[in-house]
Image 1 (spheres, rainbow, N blue to C red):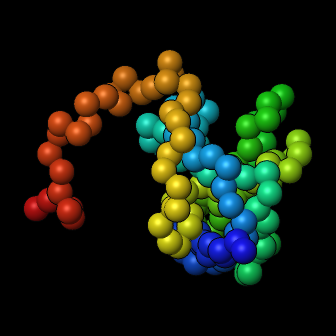
Image 2: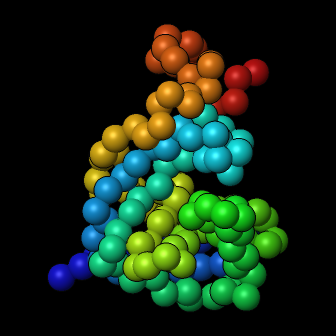
Length: 135
């Protein structure tokens, strides 16, 4: 029996649930994912068997496909938060890990495209860490 994993965008306009298991959890450092996230890497869960069900706000979901590529990103048109994408070239469901409302139940599988890592993305465990915004 598969557990149902609820998720939502940042503003809550879009609500969804994923039923099924994830095959992999990749941290992708390619330049496209850096642009998508505005950060060092994307953190996406992948499944060929899980199902996506939109609970509310599906009309607020937009999917962008980079021309002449398989690179896709779905997002909320209200707040811009990343949302799950069912890849148009098959049955691959890609779910941004941060879009889930609960802890991800598998550890990251691998870092991808590390040759494209941001130049500042190294030794991050060495810099100060704060549990909230520093004063």
